[in-house]
Length: 374
Ligand code: G3I
Image (cartoon, rainbow, N blue to C red):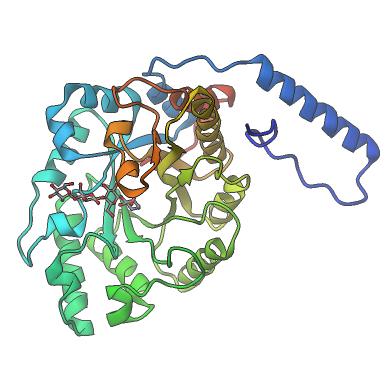
């Protein structure tokens, strides 16, 4: 179980010469907070509370969606429309699906997601343009000169960003530019052909195609301090110094239970201080099988802490969970032995994690922040 201070506002740092009295007061405050946390048990959530709360705080709360259940499953639709304010296409806007063969575009999935969102008044986060995964063979196995690959990039952006211009206003342009663990750039196709400047080139190009879109770099493993987090920060400051159009950083937030860092808000605030938006773009917290009530309760605290971290950062605009229900989560396929990572269970019943998010929003004074929510 997390300690009483980890879910709340961090106490301001004090110098070594701080007054004893201040220390004593701090201890009392921590104790009072601890009592409050114990004294206010989490109410179960029946679902449906989040959109109004998100609205009151001026942030978006999103969910990653798959096309098939979004179109065919009424219960799935109800969870999406009743609990969230934005959607991200979990897969269908990725290169593999949008342009499976060169110049052959399949808009059925993206159109279904955007149409559903518009029909229900939800925002859409665009995901994703340049990624090393889920590329079609013609692209990943092709032999490209710099000029050819830039042409391919431009054609794809013209098609995808152009089609949804003014309807999708936020895009993950660069997805996972760093190696899985460590401070180096990933040597993906784009890096191999264009060199490390591919990131600046892609952002600049996306800005040319849709000058009003909010353009993001989206990454995992940067939620707590470490050399990967610092490497991304250095990359971003370099891009900004060079005037490259970049508007936000996505903190993916794929956590294993027990790993939500204490300093997530600090890491996000670094970008806020640079004038960038931040978002928690792919939140889930996976539990070892089989999860019992204690694990689900602890998971609820972790969801709560992540939402609180967002509320603690002035330019955090959205928290998106990575799937509608545990049944639809990517976790069991990718992490055998882990499960139950999302706020709704296999049968679309709300879990304590949903109440954790609600509680984070209810306990903070609603302060409507301006700006762009998806
Ligand atoms: O397209 C095939 C389909 O033809 C086939 O019938 C079906 C059978 O299982 O598989 C389909 O492919 C699956 C694909 O998702 C679409 O559903 C793959 O097996 C599956 O591995 C793939 O996983 C996706 C993964 O990205 C790919 O790397 C996950 O659903 C998706 O949640 C995940 O999302 C990524 C974010 O985009 C970026 N950040 C990390 C995150 C988790 O990996």
